[in-house]
Image 1 (cartoon, rainbow, N blue to C red):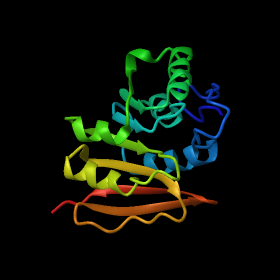
Image 2: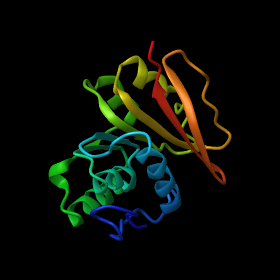
Image 3: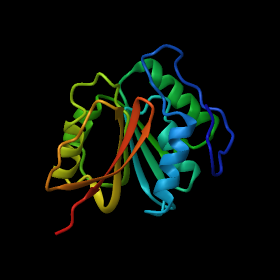
Image 4: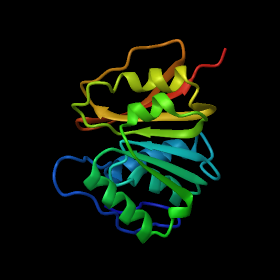
Length: 183
């Protein structure tokens, strides 16, 4: 797996070799960031990467000009790879790494982000709770985006706090974009 664009373009990212982590593929990351570049500036943005795994989404954002990325990962093995990737790219000063459950983090954090990625395991039972928590706690800036990578079989209910779309499908993987509804 490699960083697709920006100052770390072509650099290899390492991840666990078992199926405990499902990193975003190069194709998914390239498409997601192509959509984002027409919707929001990444330069100087604050990014949150939930269920971070190897950190590929947050690292791609840093490569494209994000000012800071916070990575939340509970798996000890994945965390070791994430920290190794950040060290190899010498971007630890632009990063915060937390070993904890992502939903627990969302329930306790204050402040907000310009861009939030969530890439939970497909079998994660609380994926549909992620947008509710983020929007009810105002964790996403008004012009920001939440992106959730999930199984094709999962659908998010409409809610007055957010707007869904676009939705990008890659085989059995779907990335759903969310924006805050403005009155």
